[in-house]
Image (cartoon, rainbow, N blue to C red; front, side, top):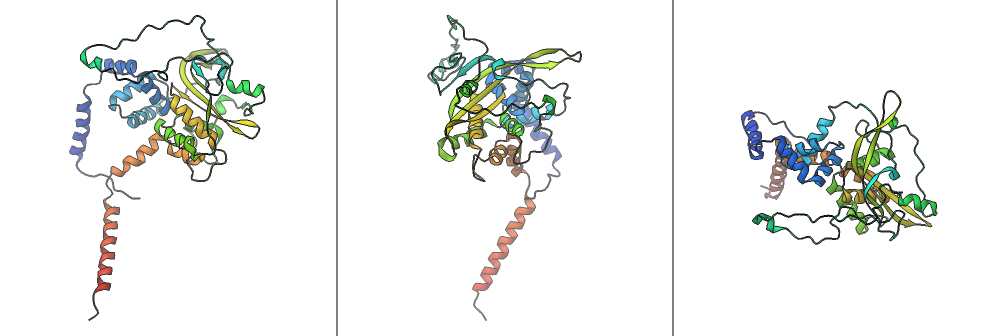
Length: 351
């Protein structure tokens, strides 16, 4: 497909951007702070899809783009590429996650117990219209548990492996600095396992949900059961030049294990991302579960879902159709006119 660059009209182009900025109004640090405080799950989504953990910058990206998610992710990714990479953190083990929420739909009782944590899963979805009439929506006080759940929980899949219910993938002893990086290396198929998980980690949430939902409804090879869903905080452990290891801080992470019966054991799908985003993790883990043996061109084929859940690239391709395509379109019209003229000439009676 060919298109031509927009030429001329520089003043109109400049004014169009000014009009957009005028509608957004003045962006201040106070507005950024308000967005950060009011929409934490949206902030998490932007950070995850941009593959950059910085709540302030994610809030700024949302403020600057008026909440247009694709644009916000794009500008945050663009900013990330300008920054140096100072250190590679150590791998994070599941049982080292400071857990806020951990549930399983596969078992009623799991090691460590079910931890509901913060969720709207069991609440009524009722719009608080009284807020518009000046009555604030005040959250009820949280009552502390009589016996708090342990902050660190084992993996359900690890427990299943001990009981010979599932085969865990072999431990990858690749040094952290040698792990393939999808942001720096070309994505080739069949994809490296690291590239697949990284692509799913920063996949566009809606795209992952659409394809994951298709698999859930029967357009895949395996129906998922949530083995474990976890919202947690992870310590970022880095090594000091003097050889000691220390925590550079914590980041919010989500992870999901889904399983399906295959033969005598369970088959495991996995996904994780920065921030708390349950829908994406369950959907992405479902795609991971279904990728083995998927038909070419199906929604669960690895090449298909990795490419088509890449939000920045796919939105950019869609948006590029707004650019001038005068040459190719006029060529199509000329071909149509020529075909009509030839058809009309064939219908004219011979003299």
